[in-house]
Length: 340
Picture 1 (cartoon, rainbow, N blue to C red):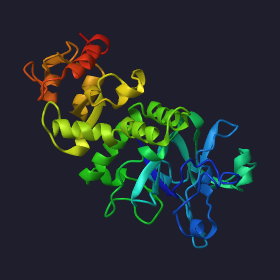
Picture 2 (picture 1 turned 120 degrees about the vertical axis):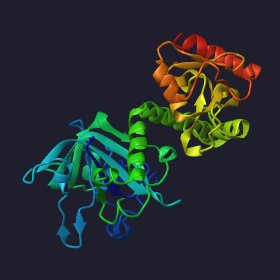
Picture 3 (picture 1 turned 90 degrees about the vertical axis):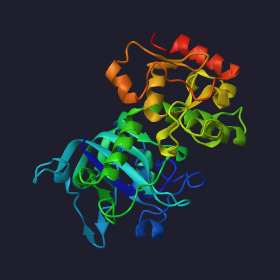
């Protein structure tokens, strides 16, 4: 996967500012934004009438308009653009600092030099006087993460993104295990049904039958943090099977899937297991399950070698025997998800 990171100003929606300044603003991203309260990226996630989104990353430095070195993405030295690139947009959270992934374009076209619109691709681009772009992608290949899902910050230092607002991480991943691991986790995020999660967050936000507090509790539970996750950490102390206590490796997994559960079930800690990410994935797709006593059930679809790699045997069991309430959820999982 050829990947380009672009750093921009921080916004909630990136759907423009004109007519929307009461609900969104842009913060950070450079001197131009500081001086003008706006920037070319404010429309990066506007769905245009031609079916594309158009992305801006600041290429100006003083009076010089810099070129993006797309040969780092596999383009020839004389090419004007390169296709099939994953462009990851980052911005600095103004509250807790640190550059964070705010969204991405898949299968994008990245131009070496700034492109000028012949005509504005949307009324919002026209209203905000956005005249140029550097990246283009199909609308259905663009994902903007809600504020609640913008996770851990990128590190700084040698090999990581510096002052130049774009970064080619492949150059450093082979020599730096931390960068390689960051890219691996990002790839999991981008391929792990995140669009469904983004849509669910939007539904919770727009719900008219929930209070602000209820929305926050549900959103925290949906994205694996807050009270639901903490209750599982308090209960298990680590992975429910292996005992691993490294928080970054653990997932607060719903036994009855979120999308099929009601709001009470979504927040019920009995409908949860704290599992290592690999075991969570196996549980989610039904390759493992649990009896009422907590003994592991292993699907015939899981080969012996893969069982060994996961660290499980037929004698593996949950470290705490399931309560009656949790048994009911495990019964649901056995009936609906487990591949017997």
